Length: 448
Image 1 (cartoon, helix red, strand yellow):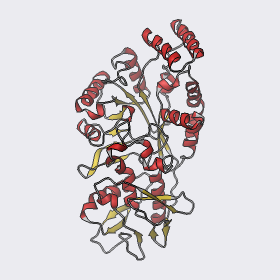
Image 2 (cartoon, rainbow, N blue to C red; image 1 turned 120 degrees about the horizontal axis):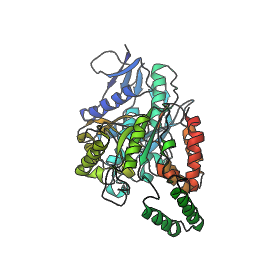
Image 3 (cartoon, rainbow, N blue to C red; image 1 turned 90 degrees about the horizontal axis):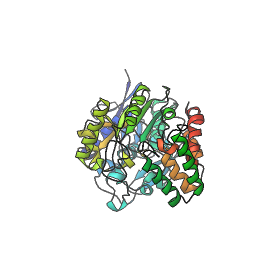
Image 4 (cartoon, one colour; image 1 turned 60 degrees about the vertical axis):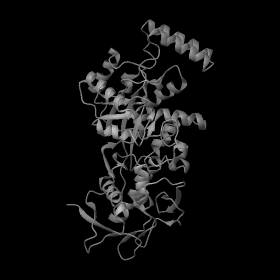
């Protein structure tokens, strides 16, 4: 039986749903000691932690509660550093400037931990973002995200904060090896077949890349394909779908439709797509829906695409990831609920490596409309190779170096959902060659 850690508080009724949500999140967090259970109980004389600017021999967390109480957008979010021995600085988040200092001293925590946690994992800043702040993907532009603006996105700030919190209240060292899942989005099945794709690709090589050397390389490669000496450049699936069982989860997301130029790159009933799906199933992968560019905004599209995938594989689809990470906070999560989706993996950055939700661990996201947790679970995606490609182009750093450093500095107390697209392993491109070497020779050793 876990020991009850009793929390008493002085919160107004308007904040109680969100406070209970945060305590439930903390209790479900994988870093929490198994013999500890946080309980909210204002009716008992026992008290282990008081939430409300009080003092005493028990632990105390001061109240800010702006995100627990408010339901409106704020113009600014203020980061305030708090130092902690043998740990990174922790950043309180508020809608007003507060005084920094020690994270914990004389039984007192320096800032409102619960309020800050809610800000991160509920995606408060995204849900209440002003329309002018939204980018092409349909949600808050990445350069406007609190974590990105303050250069905190490459660390699991929520997991780090809770590890320190658990160490203090349990007097136990919290240090676990990070765990890993792997996933693949199949946006495009082939590069050169049928024949018109080959000629279109050649034209793009000259027009966009202005590279005659790539033109001749592509032409020679295509000749080898005709002679069956090479596979299509995007056909990397035999290696991509690793046979091993080391990963905590293995997922592949398939597209089945769409109504824009970003979609419809292959047909889900194409024999090659069916063969790929069967190979993935045989190797222990779960099959998920990579819903199209507009499907997260249109109930009919989402339902139709899900049903089409189910008809092809003969299984109920419960996993989802939005194409281009397109997401409407007022629409998309409710489409997941109404279509019996139990897990989503869209919460990621498209231009950066990092923890969009502050945590790498799966959890229930918050439904602001109904003031409760959603029924489905979010599996945050923390490392996508296409994000690393964007980041490398912007910074001039080596692509695989960026990925390696990111993995190495998050080797404990979090979970990394890794994602790789088959189309980015194109051997005719330098990035594809580098990714092939990294994926085949280095990735496993970095993680295990």
